[in-house]
Image 1 (cartoon, rainbow, N blue to C red):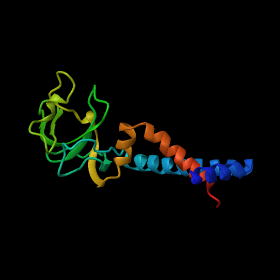
Image 2: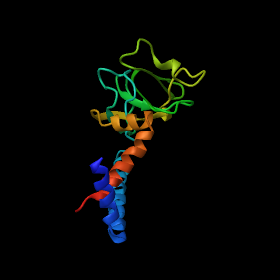
Image 3: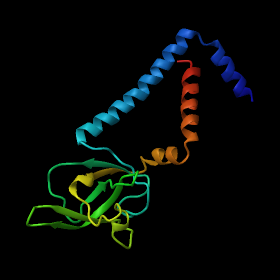
Image 4: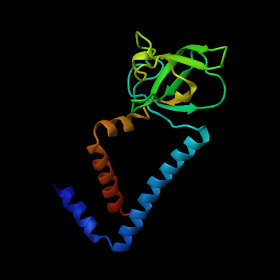
Length: 178
């Protein structure tokens, strides 16, 4: 319990100006990270989702952060895409297994499946929907950062850790002597 007393004494010894400067510096660090993340999303034209299930193993593992790219190139069978469907909160990362283009009107229909799944994704689509359309696609997976998404998964599954983490970082920042 001696470290608690030292921490409390350290916080008490800080002057108001020091506390404000450290709080502003901490806010700048968080803001810089957010700006870099948003800039990356703007440059690629999409978000960077995190794989939250094992349905794409061995290609992607739970916790991998994906880099997406969206362009006008046609989607082909074998492409790994991230898509949203009505009624699903979380984007889904799966491989395109079939592409159908209707000759009469040029409409494109896609069918997806997780690599580790036994059946296609029709059960994941909105009620009555049998195919995805290009507007459902957020982007193609063009790269990944292994395990980088675990922070997001843990923070989502255990929200109390968000407060603990922010409090701990803030306390360490306020009590540092530099």
